[in-house]
Length: 251
Length: 251
DNA sequence: CGAGTACTTGACACGTTTCAACATCCGTGG
DNA sequence: CCACGGATGTTGAAACGTGTCAAGTACTCG
Image 1 (cartoon, rainbow over the protein chains, first blue to last red):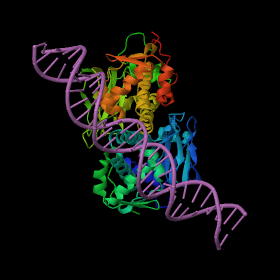
Image 2: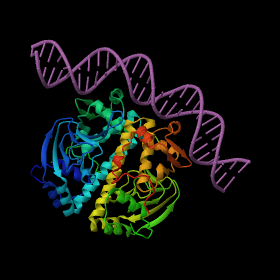
Image 3: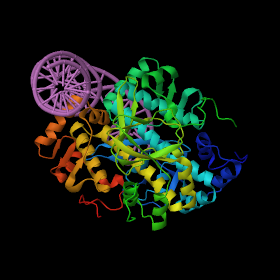
Image 4: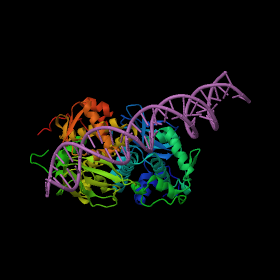
């Protein structure tokens, strides 16, 4: 990690969490030409059907992929946090099959596909790391399939909270199992395939059992083991090199 | 396509369905050293937690990925047909997060990761095609998330039948919307997150409406447009270069 | 012929959705 | 400054989709 503060700070943390890059690779990633933009909540980054020529990574904030089903219902497919490259796939999947939006205000960095292809060609380990990153996205989708198909509301919600806490922890944003999680109950409903009303009741149930406290977009996991058990959560599908210890990120 | 019959016939059809390879690339894929094996139904190919050194492709038959949730329930995550490389991901995701099993008797070909890495290094277009293939797997998982989270039983089942028909059609195995689909109702239940009983009733409903006929592992889609409408199915998430016309594959 | 597997049916129970009402907070404009 | 609308969260009661249980049929295979 370079000593001077870097725009790609969280991206590098994220890459480091899943793959061992050497200093030259890190420098190459850090030199990628990016364009930075600040976005409000609920802004589309790329829409279903489009053919973007660039990908983005999240400097801060949270985004989600979603699709609108025939009946007009929105299904959220995944959430993404600082350090993620949510639409990295677009380098080889030219036409978008879903829509990427901000969930909260975000600072984003955009990279042209050209530049990504170039760095992949020059530095095979970066190519490996990026390919691996898209494969981890796929692994998360698999887990969501299992979560939606195989668990009931209570476990489903608990599982999602575990996932978000651990992913934020992997980039140093969940000290002591406390993290900023700017998701509304209605978005939670769209993500878990539940009604907003039932999300509300289920959250109350999680609170009543002393597992979590969630107020003003701040999630505090009070009983991590209990929440993991409730959500039948096993983090191996996140393919982290080392499990985050949930302490502060070393300076 | 080479004139002599090739072990990799369906793999090449599949690659061709998603990416334009030139003759040299095709030849390189065709020359990959493989080991062929025949397996019975319900045999595990790779298990959760393992670290395989090879990937496989399906010469004939059908496989599925699944996970066992805490309550012992099996959730099927995806099905794979002839030409697919179901565990291609294992080249960069060393530890398996789910289990791959045969659904029907299968003829499989195994390729060492070494050989795959070598062909990727030598032929960038093959690397692109393979990366793209893993991204399409991810796109299918996304659609399954939307299907499980956003649609009710009837549409969910119809959608799955559409997907399987179209994927089989893409490699020439669904002439006139008729295909061999060796899946039991109980497996269908594990895939759609429904009970076997409800799958049974829902299938009857699809039959009663004249959309499909399904007997002895042979699925005949009698009303393709109707089934698409019932399943809210839009094939763009499969990222096929050209939509299959469901006629026989040209010789 | 018996055992096993896949499929089918009916009745009831349960998880979850729906609807409608209400509380709270916040930024905006009169 | 307060009134207002809009988004978010909360609650209760009834309706609905789907799961569960239990029994029975049809087939295949040794």
